[in-house]
Every structure is written in C-alpha cells, then in structure tokens.
Length: 202
Image 1 (spheres, rainbow, N blue to C red):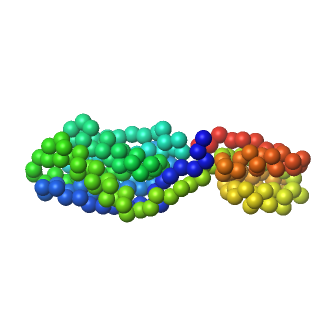
Image 2: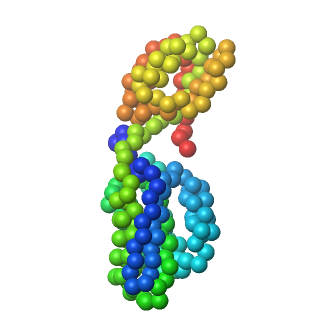
Image 3: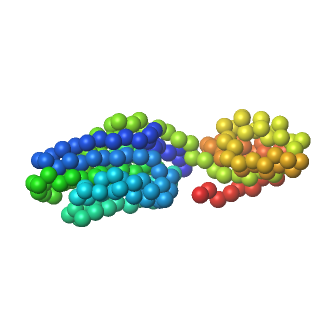
C-alpha cells in the first residue's frame, strides 16, 4: 500500500482557441465534493454567457472518487478527455472545469476531444505535481504532565496537531503519516499515561 499520493501544488488557468471557440481551463485542488460544487457555482456566475461548463475531478488518497460531465457537449467529448489528462499526471484531489465560449463553427467529435484535452493539459503544465503523505487520524488523551513526552513524539514522527484541548487532562487530535504509523504506535503504547484511539478520516 502506498504511503503517498500525488496532487497539484496550486491553481492554474489556461486558454485554448480553435476555430473561434474559446476553452478556458480552470484547475484547482479539492478534498471533497463540496469544495468542487462551490467552485463550479462561482465559475458559472463568472461566465454566464458560456455555452458549456464541462468538468472532471478525482479526489481521495486512493483516487476512487471521481466524476465527469460533458454539460451538453456530445457524450464522451469533454469530461472524459479532461479526466484523462488528470490521470495521465497521476494526480488526485484535483478538479478541472473547462468553460467553452462557442465560436460559431462546429468542431466535430475529434475536434472537441482534442480541444478539451489540450486546454486541460495546458493548465496542468502551469502548476507542479507534488507528493503528499497519506495521513491517519488518532486521538490521544493524557494527563497534562505527559504533554512534553507527547510533543516529542509528535515532532519525531512528523505528525500534525489538528486539534487540541490542553487542560489538567488533555485531548489531542493528530494526523500521523501512514509511513510512520507502526513506529508511532509502538512508541505511543510504551507511554502508560497516554490513551490512544484511531479515528476514521473524513
């Protein structure tokens, strides 16, 4: 099982023109469907006169959540080529919306596939692909006296503190790199005063 996944470093926008039609490809990171829906709504508001707002996205560290839309273009001419470009880069947690302004000349099926593919490829060239660790969520509960030991553990295994309540009795939510999970658990379970529970990731 892989301990890392690949995604895009940031947003990008590229434009491609063919026989008067303009294809504006907006590439952006997402971690859930709601992120995507909000952005699609904004782009539709920004481009109310566009003929089509076609898209594809893939998210989740295993990349199994994906969707495509041709938004009125002939079936398979927009969403699939867009997703194909994301997949050729091996990225997840990424979405592309291609906004098309019709130029008066029909491009035909091969022309449309080429246009949506090219617009997406151009946007993908503008932002680096980065490797990210797959994180696992844990909840730690411990007495305040154990805080220093816990923080040393956090630092040693490159964990991220997602949430914490530090009182006499402390509660901490950690994101632990999957690559370090076994060692982290081994060391954490050596600490008698710390109760540790795995949490389901969002």
